[in-house]
Image 1: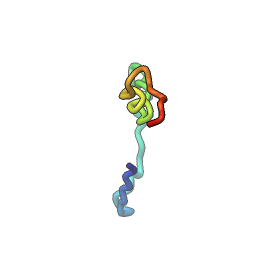
Image 2 (image 1 turned 180 degrees about the horizontal axis):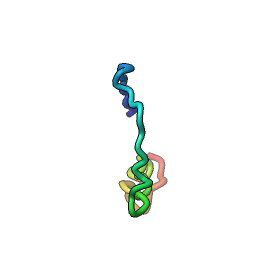
Image 3 (image 1 turned 90 degrees about the vertical axis):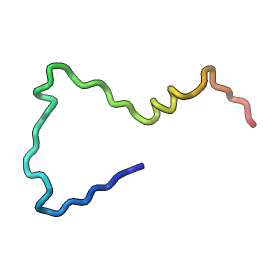
Image 4 (image 1 turned 45 degrees about the vertical axis):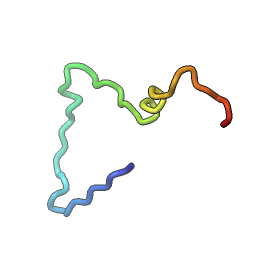
Length: 50
């Protein structure tokens, strides 16, 4: 599901801050939906047609 946020021009940010530059360690890789679905798949996967 995608979310779209609409802002008035007065609410659009004019300054940005690079948080990663001040982090002591690199962030963990993103957990994408594909990885979540794969983790929920029973193992071993069944390839039989129903």
